[in-house]
Length: 88
Image (cartoon, rainbow, N blue to C red):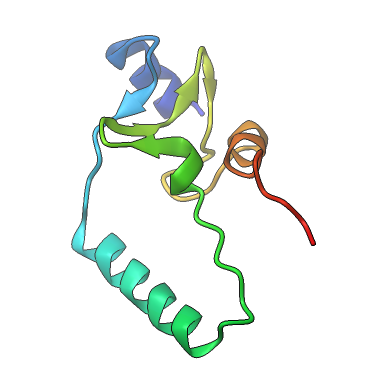
């Protein structure tokens, strides 16, 4: 959207934001890990593996945003996040 477009222009063409490490994110990851341990038949797909590095998380590719809001991937973001996923 317009917010992300303005953010991309302000940050530059690199399209990487620093990691936040928020308490909410940490709690969500803890709960997902807890459920995954209790249900080993469930495959957890973490888009962070494809979108993030130690430098931060990619939010844009050129002038295209990878998110439609602060929590949901755009079509392009989903394609990138799932690009190496192997289906059984």
